[in-house]
Amino acid sequence: MFPPVAVIGAFVAVVALSIFGGLLPLGPAKALVKLIATCFMGVAMSVYGMVTVLQIARAPRVSAGGVVRAVQVFHGKGAHTRFELDGPDGPVTLHLSYSGGAITEGDQALVRYVGGMGTVTHLEMLSGPQRGWSTEANDGTMGAWMMFGVGVILVLIAFWNNARYPDGSSGRRRWW
Image 1 (cartoon, helix red, strand yellow):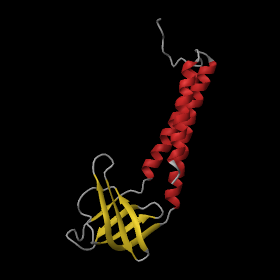
Image 2: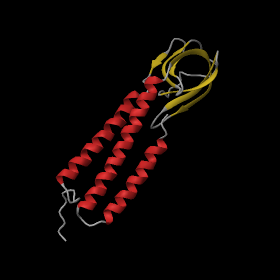
Image 3: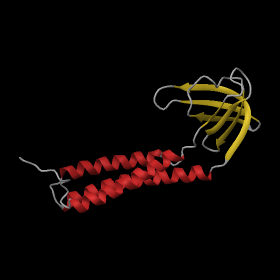
Image 4: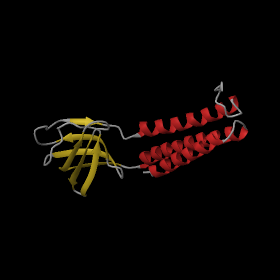
């Protein structure tokens, strides 16, 4: 995966530029700093989203069957299940956007996942109390496209605001 550290670094740079821009008086310099800061963050988000989409698209889809081991279920916001599958090619760590109790250790399972990322797109239980149970999940493409779209929208808003308020005022009137 493209390192999210790059997006965090871009965010820190944007905060620094915003603080610097806040110290400037109204004028073209302030407008330019605001434009650069917003465009920088928008481009960082767009690049992160596009690289993630390309990595998901290029990653092989792997089908494997084996014994489920080391099940960890996480509840709350971002609930998911992480587990290992002892397949014929050795153990592989997988994760799935599911937080129920149908995946239990020691059961046989058949999975299809995104290679290199471990994101399960299809899971079917072959043994145990949940035999015959299956689930489908997405591979993360929609979230990556959303990140790309938000980045593009940020860049468009930055240029629109710069054209509308060339003095960097953002249209606010000060009465003092």
